[in-house]
Length: 505
Image (tube, rainbow, N blue to C red; front, side):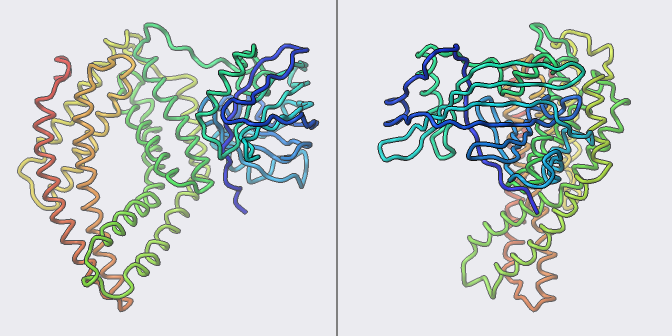
């Protein structure tokens, strides 16, 4: 059985002095009534690995009894104010994390065992905030907390805090209105994102602080950490079958691989070559699932524009059957990769690179000096790829333009990596590179589309399907490809003439 869909949770926490009254919020954010408090006693056990891998990744996993939402809760970070919460009911062994949740956090635990790390008891007084029609807008809770963290030495603490949580249907912008009212009433924003983080305190290593004058290695490592975080968050989405999650995971994989390759003079390219190869493997395992998704959407949109008199028979039903099979095969392949040992080893290798990076002498240079050469090299590779495509025709031209697209993507990713250093100096050049990449991406869609249409025509003929519409779409894609090549030629001239720093070449 799959885990349930995540529920959005938007909230902020506040410090409040002992003995202080709970602020009144009537008149704020559409609140017409603030109910008298309803008391709940909540008893929660928190689970993590012994090295706090979940907490370090911003995740919280607990088993809570008491209150209206008793059960197993897994909280996934989205932003400073928002999390996605996955809930499972109580049941089974109370001391063992359900398998569905263990599998969801595999990219974070990397096979380490989940054990109890803390216990929190909260005496909660909940105030319901409702509009004039009686609809709940938010809940303001006054929490009196007692916590105990295990480990080599026990840690005990107790405190009081306020928590303002919006209902899922409430406009997120109202959180700011409530925040201004609460701080105006004398409470202060909590220093910790969660009760567990407060209790653990310095048991969690502090994230690296950016230096005022970063080195080249600092900038590249910051980029790798960001993309690794995105990969792991997308991993959870893929396991939950959330829309666009496969795409987000593939983007993170491409950016990780591109960063390792482009900045191989900063983080030793030979040392990370096996990791880059494994990232390429993983992207390949996810590709069919994403390609099927994109191709089906595109073909259906094209079919909607074909005059009805040129569409014979149940073409759309045939597409549904065909792509359903392709999607199932693609998802099976993706999930097989994500549940295998090879994937865990890949993530462990990424962890190792970030924990003990193989930095070169170039990495110690100031960022502005140490990052120019890799970026200039990426720009030159793009220019050489474009030059190699000139004069080609047919399939050779299609392959060459696809290579230009890949080099443009690498150059754009490299520009994004160095943005904290060069700011707006590369803005115009990046914009022109992105335009080229997008146009050639659309061109590649026509190449793939024609291949798929060819397969559809063969499969449809075998089932007695009239495939005339597929021929129409094939011809349209050929014409569209020619138009896109013309657009690319204009964009390339603009890219060559566009503003850029002189050192970029």
